[in-house]
Image (cartoon, rainbow, N blue to C red; front, side):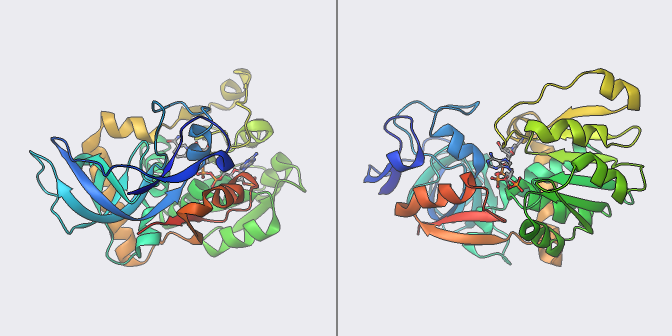
Length: 325
Ligand SMILES: NC(=O)c1ccc[n+]([C@@H]2O[C@H](COP(=O)([O-])OP(=O)(O)OC[C@H]3O[C@@H](n4cnc5c(N)ncnc54)[C@H](OP(=O)(O)O)[C@@H]3O)[C@@H](O)[C@H]2O)c1
């Protein structure tokens, strides 16, 4: 099969598509014929050895996708050859076939194309878990989303609005804010041209947001935290800006704030039943037309480095997808 193979850690342009043997399903595993795979920020970190989880070399990157089940190993129940699925993997999605534990394969929402379904699971499941279990977001609360046009940010704008919050989108360009408005944001802040804390305060009559969703980190974290309402929940999602912020602990003390870590991939291991219930909720939202992944652009597997450049240059709005099958 064709696969993008990381022989040595390095930048996107250093990795090539190669022929490698097809995977074989072990006990409890399924083989998926991959139709499409979504590119996520952690993939860019992993190929360079900068992610918190690192497969042994050589490896095939790619953490989520969609396709058709082509084989099952011993002891697999509830998944059958021919099923259309979305799937999650630590690595392996940027290939024509992938082998996965059966628990990492989910029914594809019938309303979605394979390209849309490829980028559905990780982004929406992360954001829904963050808003629901970690922030306990309530209707009528104000939610500030940083990086609001990126993969998890865009999903959060949609979900926050469906959950009845007032969503303030914050992003680096006006074009991205327009995109976030099309997903349900009621207000937008361009943090490249305005002071984030002052702008948030201005939009909320000084009250501040109840929940902040932060996948960006860096220099945005402290002004976002300082802008918050009493009793707010600050969701630590990721550090796309590169720097992990250091926050003085008097800030949460002064406002009764909670700084809440979100690690969806680990939560799935701790609470598979909770994840299954969340996924059912998300499928119902797709079926009602409340949410729908936005695919900005699809690339061929051979165009991997161009696809990465869209993300690393901060040009992505919604999902970047590799068209594989
Ligand atoms: N905790 C979890 O369970 C979990 C799950 C999934 C993802 N994540 C993390 O969430 C973060 C975002 O992932 P994603 O897939 O949504 O990424 P993405 O689509 O690339 O979005 C990240 C956003 O960050 C902003 N940004 C600011 N500085 C940047 C820089 N130097 N390079 C790239 N982007 C920059 C960009 O928005 P502007 O240009 O508008 O600033 C961009 O839209 C990553 O750190 C990822 O590891 C965490």
